[in-house]
Image (cartoon, rainbow, N blue to C red; front, side):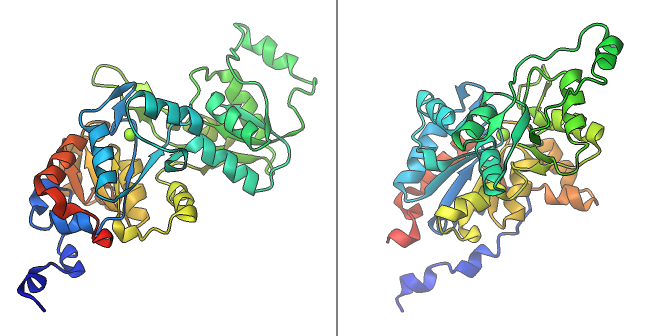
Length: 339
Ligand SMILES: [Mg+2]
């Protein structure tokens, strides 16, 4: 064995990195090239990591490009339910990201796939947008019309008018709840009423409480809507998005991935990081979105087991810092399997 080989770190050296310690990635500097060499794939959350709304985050496009050139597979796992995969692909392209359809996993797509694989027969009542209804349509599943459905000013007259008229569509066999900026009391009544039937499936695209939106405004996310419906329905939904392992299981169908060789990058601990840890992936939290440095520091001294689980392996201010680390090490971070 050559001296160079003796000096080379082993896979066990990676175990010296304390998992779930929430350390700045720059602090693993000695092991960083070896860590990168042994990664096969990087999974990105999108909003708050690659872009904020319609604005790319600094360094994001270049990082994705760089990861491809050093031999990593790249996947984009978004909990956002407002677009189909094709529409997400358009967004990636318009913002200057290289991506292909099979690298994008959205929760509307997962919802449609899930119902199809349940051999679902019937119609779907959707609280959500065309992202969901179009994906359902793509797999041949019919849904009721979406859009504004406001409660008339005189609610009591409206409610009494429902009885005894058969108001609910008897063919509805599933309720899907995603993001819907037209959420109304009327929609909650309908969803919860359909869900009185225990055979009616209840699917939520995701449970993110808020959208990343900057410091001045709170933008309620799908989780706020899901919680309203599940409280009224007194039922728990089957959730498609992170932290549910569904997105990783979907990617694994077509790509043979070893979780120990996958890095999940996210901006939200209770979805992205929890998902990554539950699936056995490495986790990196970036502070360009929802979860803050202060929260990580609080969880580090917390005695609460759930909060401890929200601490990532690594953290960085943003994806451009990861790009800088990779560039600093040059070609030594190239995928070990490609040597
Ligand atoms: Mg995010």
